[in-house]
Structures are given as structure tokens and as C-alpha cells.
Image (cartoon, rainbow, N blue to C red; front, side, top):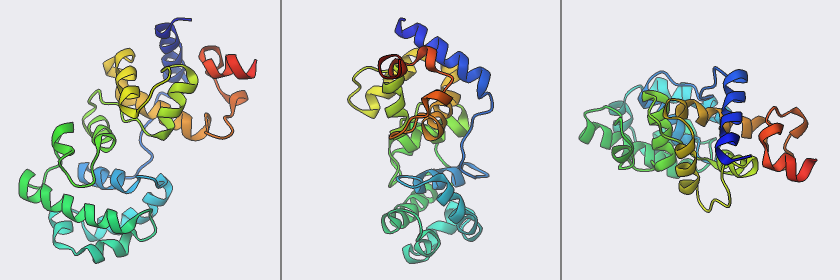
Length: 213
């Protein structure tokens, strides 16, 4: 099977079986998504969704959050991972949104990455989810299963994986493909015990062919 054939089979299966894939984070606007994605670093979406309703009620806009103290923001997010650093980043990001971007979340990766605490993965998520841009955010799930399935080969970094995936996945599918791969890695192709017998990608999975047959 060629690499292109593997991609075609995988994408066809996802399109048929997961047509409505999307973010599991709860948000109502670009600012809320940005905040939620920042909070989700090394933390579960479930935990983030628990803390964000009160956080968003207290600080519905970048201006509201910029005027809060780090301690006040911390009090709402204390149960997520690394709350001190995230409180600092959220306040600084809100201030930059107000002072530089007139309270609006930038719609491109370069400007998003100027925000404190926002790396390439977070910027890619925001661009893909909000503006449906062909950006592929590679988290630990996607990095792992892309290699396991055979969509990448000996990838050395998330950026290398991102470049390979965006090379082979049609542009119009990239925003949705991010969610396909992430959710598949989260619930089926798990790190320690992949649920191979429940997986619909057996016919195009390198791991299944090498290990399970």
C-alpha cells in the first residue's frame, strides 16, 4: 500500500463514520476558544469544561480579563494543570489582545503566536476551528497515532508530523481531519492499550498489520 493510498482509505473511513467531528471544548466565541485551548495544555477537556463556565461569566471579554489580577484568574482555574503559569499567561494574553489587537482574537498563526502562552499547536487549533483554515494542530494523540497508523514514518517532531499530514490531506479536510485523528487517538487508538479490535482502520493500519496479525 502506498502512502497516498493509506491516506485515502483512512480519510474515507473517517468521513463515512465520523462526519460531525469537532472540538470537545465548550466555547461561544473566538476568545473563549482561545482561553479554553490554553487551559487544555496537559489537561483534559473534561476538566477545562468544568472550570470555564464560571471563568467566562466573570471575564466575558479580553478587556474584563485584562483588568483582573493573576490571583483572581487563578481562583477560577486552580483545578487545571499548572494554574499559576496559565493565570499569568491568560492575563498577559488578554492585555495584548486589548492593547494590540483591539480586543479581537487574531485570525492567523503568526499573530496568535505573539500572545503569551500561545504556541503553534494552540494557534493551529484556533485557526482551524474558528476560521476553518487548513492548519493541523499536532498534539500527543495525533503525533502518536499518525506514526502508528502509518501516516508518518519515523517523524521526529510535531512540526514534521504537521507538515506530512498537511501534504497528504486535502486542504478542505484538514480542519476536520484534526478532530478525526485526535478523537480516534483519545478513545480508540490509545497509548497503552489501543482498542484494535474495535477499530475501523485495520485495513489501512501499519500497526495492525505488523503487530496484530
